[in-house]
Image 1 (cartoon, rainbow, N blue to C red):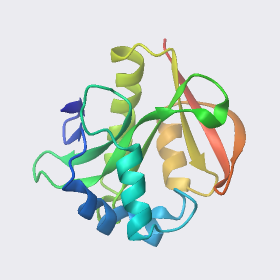
Image 2: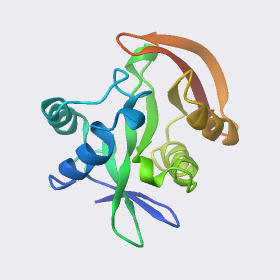
Image 3: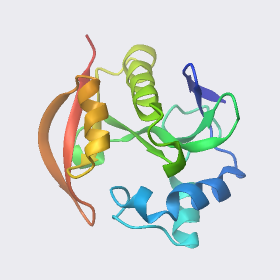
Length: 171
């Protein structure tokens, strides 16, 4: 099921066949995962556990991670989605995205971030949505600043270090 669609991308429910591509391109790539997860690549079993526990497969629930697919090639370029903002101690949600390295520099991060914020606030009707980003992840920080999100106080995540907190409010 399609959750979000942009000019070039589709954010859709995950399929079991996505696991291998996501593991090869994202979960096991130390450069991709250095600012995500616990700061390092996943083993195969960690990747499988993360995939099975955090991804949205049915599409009936709008929350959880989904595969990002390039429309033209139908290739999986990464994952994104809305998850509970449990680190903020509120009943809010955070959005996030992780792209395979070969898809960096194409504007996909900005495209999927804009789409997720719009979807969360205008389709799902949330009053606000957050993004948490590693303080050294300058590329993602630039994306969030480009979206003109407000910055809240940073939070420390167990086993993941300090994260900057950005917020989009319904207007």
